[in-house]
Every structure is written in structure tokens, then in C-alpha cells.
Image (cartoon, rainbow over all chains, first blue to last red; front, side):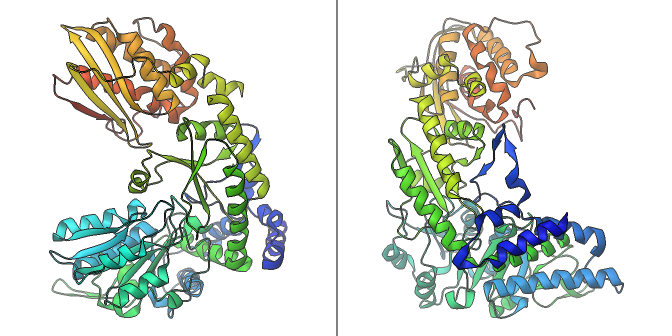
Length: 423
Length: 164
């Protein structure tokens, strides 16, 4: 069984950017051959979570079958080998982001926990009454609420840089909002609701010119485009395993060594300490200082396998494949009368939000579902973005490395069925 | 598509496109706002009570086909009924769309045209769309004159996840 799968995987991965073989890729994902209500599954909800290749599923199973024990604890064979495998995943994450050192890679539950970690450590340390934290108007709730909690606690202000009608950041307004009171900037790399790619490098230059560190929410960008944290020069970068074809409950917080070292610990517990007495505890070295408690060991190891998988295909190849799908889908959906695409940034990736005149996104979602087409409808955990466009909700198709133009055609046919039913 | 037509029956589509009693009532004696945070839908229900009886009822807001049709047909069903009769009707309606044991079990008022919502029980994620106007009506009935706000999420996690 696994031999066939491995051959298929090698075949897809070996095909390279010049000849992206999406059919070979699809064979690596068992769920893609599923049917829903008797129709072939068309999975276009990748921005919410991505499906898993057989290699990842097998990797997690293999840990429990032959490699499982707690890490960083035992002298016994299993613990040593489980620790090695978990550390290997950390090294894969380092290489994936081109970070300078594996100790700059903190394993967390996901991007949300990474934001909370930085807000509750560096944030509480740096932000005082009257200070400001600067975000943008297209952030996901998880890059809004942790800062609101911090600002409320400190008597600080959450400043929000506006976006324009296309869903692009108003960079001039952003720059004006960078003031001597700004203590931290936190921005998405790629908007989950609109698909806008933010000019993270430029944002970082502007912030650094004023001595302000930058946190980047890379949950949507990491699965879709090459990320080099040293080239971007960002101070923190976070992303989630489950959106990059790995297991749920695992994520990465990258942080620059000097900042991580200066930060207090996040949670107290086992593994994050060097020594404990009732009088005083000294904390462990990086990154363990931020990793209290037993983590998702098997998930972390399988996350490493997911990074191997996307790296073998190549992020540039994935990016260009998804760019082709987005361009094709944008053209096709633009032809549909009464359909408006929400989010028309010039630099855009992966995500296509839309509304239909007189038809609620919920009804679009239900009708498409019966066609086997999975999309997201609602506010996409970005209510301020919806408010900005005066909409309660949108329908959102989001692409992954295994989607095809034929699936976009199915989406278009599905939308015509929706219109036929409700008009 | 026949199964989709069980949900989106002609009567439902008609009421969603041309909702009845779709306006505010100036001088309403009761008013409540219903909110579904999962989809951002909002509906306001206006009531004119005469003693225990609903003399007039209307609604406004933006919602999906199911919630708009449900609100529209609700206003037609409860007009002229007493508060107790309206609440009994909601109980029957709730049973119909959550499909407990597939049938309505308790004794109660006839649902009449509201039976067209029976298809909702096959779509558990849409149950909240159908009940939003009813929860809002109930909040208005119980509001003692002050404007009330009700959320579909106020009953705790998965309170209305409905049938299987």
C-alpha cells in the first residue's frame, strides 16, 4: 500500500516547477478521491485548513507505531529517537523560513498561540499606558484580539492602518500611524478574507527606521509563497501546520534570538526550566523557555514531513500553480452577471472572496455543498474587513496546491446553479 | 437537486424574495434585535401587543433565504395570536426543524404553512437561520418594553446543532 503512495509522491515531487504535475500531486491526497452527496469532492476551503498528503498521515502513524515516547526526558532508546525526530522537524522549519538558528524556532499550537505568546511576553514587557500597537484593517481576529487584550490591560491604544477599496494597505497612512508611541507592529503577510499580499518588507523597513519590532502572521502566506525571514528582516513570523498540509495543533513562532532572549517566559511548567527550587527558578535556553509541557510530538514530527512535501514540490512552483488558478478563476467569475469579487488587490494570492446580488453567501454555500463543492461562507474571522466593505459576509473560494482549473469550472457551474435557483 | 428543493421549497423562495411584513413599526410596543454571529445576520422584530394578543408584527434586516423566509412566515403565523399561542407555535416549529425522532411529538398547535420548513432538519447547520427570527420574537415578547438583543449563540455551544 505505502509503496504505491511513496512512488506517487516521488513522482509528483520530482516533476519540478517547469512541469507541475497536479494530477500526480492529487494522488498523494487520499481525501481528494472522496465523493460528497455522490459528487466528486471539490475542496476550495484551503484558507480554513488544508488536506493532508499520505506521507504526512503515514508519518504521524509511524511515530505511534514505532517511535513514540516523551521527548527531552528519557535516557531510553525511544525517548532519544523521538527527541531526535522532533528536533529534526524544528530544523526543517528553520530551513523552511531560512532562519539563522533552530533555537529561533518555537513550536506552538498554531499561529493564534504565537500571537498570544508575543503579546503576553514582549507585549507586556514593552507596552505601557499611552503606548500604541499598530495593526492593519485586514487582520484576522487572531491578530486583533490578543492586542486588544494587551492594550486594555496596559491602558494602551490599538492603532489600525486603513485599507482601500481594492483591499490594499494604505502605506502612507500606515507610515503616519507609526509614531514615537508605537511599540509594536503586527500585520498579516496575506489576508485570509481578501487575498491581499502585504508589502511586509517595506512595512518592516518603515517600522525598523523608528526602532519598532514587527510581528508577521504568516498563516496564509507560508503555504503559498517562499518566505525568507532574514531577507524580510521581520522580527517574528508565525504560521500553522494545518494550513500547510500538516497536522492540526502545531505551529511555528520564529523570533530573532536577541528578542526571544530578552522576553520573559510565556507559560510555566515542565521543560521550560533549567532548575527549580521553591525560592527560585531559572529558565531553560531557547527555544525551550517558551515550550512548557509536553507538546504535540507526533504532530510536530509529521509537520516536518509536510514541510518536506511542500519543499520537494517547491514553493515557487506552488505559488505559480495557485497564481494560475486565481487568475483563471478571477476571469471566469468576473463573467458571471451579478457577481462581485471582494478584494481586488494588485498583489494577491490564493483567496477569492465574492458576493452575488440578492443571494446570501449562506445559501450559496449550501447549494454548492450539494454539488460537492466546499467553500467558506461568513465573515472569515475578519469582521472589521466585512464592515469595511459594508457586507455581513462573503463566499470564499481558496486554493491549494492540488486544485485544478477543472475544479474552478465546477465552481462556476455551481454558481450558475445557485443563480438559477434564487433569481 | 431534488434534495435541495426539500430545503428551498417554492414557498420559502417566494417569501425570501418578497418578504411579508418587512418594515419597521413606528410606535411598536416591543422590539428585539436578533443576531447570528456565525454569519453576521441581523434581524429586528417589531411587535404591537394588545393585552396578551399580538395585534401587529413586522421585521427588518438582512439574512439568508432561510432566515428571511422564516421571519416572513412567522409574522403571518403569529399575527392575532396570544403570547402563549405564539410561544407554543415556536416550540412546535423548533421540534419540526430539529427533527427530534423525525416527528413532532408533543401536542400543540397546527403548524400549517410552516411545515414547509421540515427540510431544514436535513441541514443541521441551517437550523439557526430558521430559528433566529423566532428567538428574536420570543425576546421581544419577554422584553417588557425595553429593546432586547438576542444571539443564536447565547444557548451555549451547539445548543441548536439539530439532528444528525
